[in-house]
Length: 219
Image (cartoon, rainbow, N blue to C red; front, top):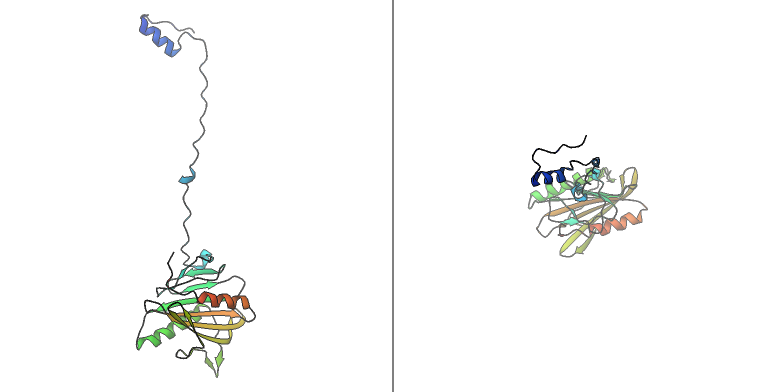
């Protein structure tokens, strides 16, 4: 039906007609649905970096990894590609498909309390790796702490080492390596490692990793 003009047919009415399209038979343009706004990439939640506090996080060491040694002011660079976890009572590193593993912990005790704390830490680490210690005359292996098998220098730190054969882990027979050192803050560190017999690659990587123990940059 055509528009009927208003009684007021002055200039203002003419302007209203022009704006409203009154008098025109043209159908209004159909509404075009607008697309939903795209979600900005920056709006997506960022994936949090794992804390690597449990082996279940599946953290794998790189050449830049510095795993903190609890109870000390030191770090260790685990072998590249090995899994690791910085747990509250010890730091552990191991590789899938092998019984090879390393575990470290620090303690702060001096004087008459040091031997007891050292033995407790050593026992804790052996238990953590579920190592069956070799026995001699029905006595399980314990390092002669005052007489290391080897001593190495690592910067300003001195690494004392003990080794035993015929240890067992995960059904494999191999070598037990025990480490003792003191960090620059004076805190003691004990390390226990296992490598199966014939696994020369793991032996080399464990030895190299233990020599990285030091202050680190905590990056």
